[in-house]
Image 1 (cartoon, one colour):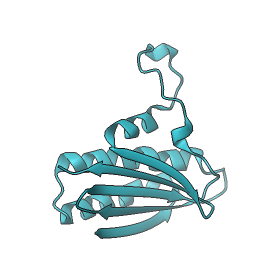
Image 2: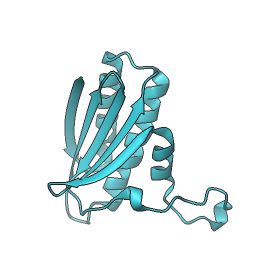
Image 3: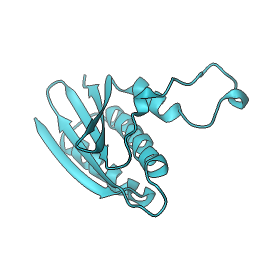
Length: 137
């Protein structure tokens, strides 16, 4: 198993640094571009949810991202020290409703669940931990 971890402050300006971390890891592992893109989209959705919804005004959250490559696939874990929140507990959005009828939000987590083979949430030692796995062909 190959694993790397990084941590950044929970602010939107850190997204390019996290994306570069992901791209470097995937490039050194020679993963297909289409698979890398799936993880880039998931990382952006989950990280921006932490920044926008898991951080109270005037507080700074720390977000850790770990990547683990095994023979079965790639697992990305996003951890933050914000208030406990399980994004998987949200009901799925009604994607058949017209845009005017849909509430704002909720599509990001739905999209991540559709793109990944497994997504799980846990609250571990006062931290939110969202784990996303994609099997590699």
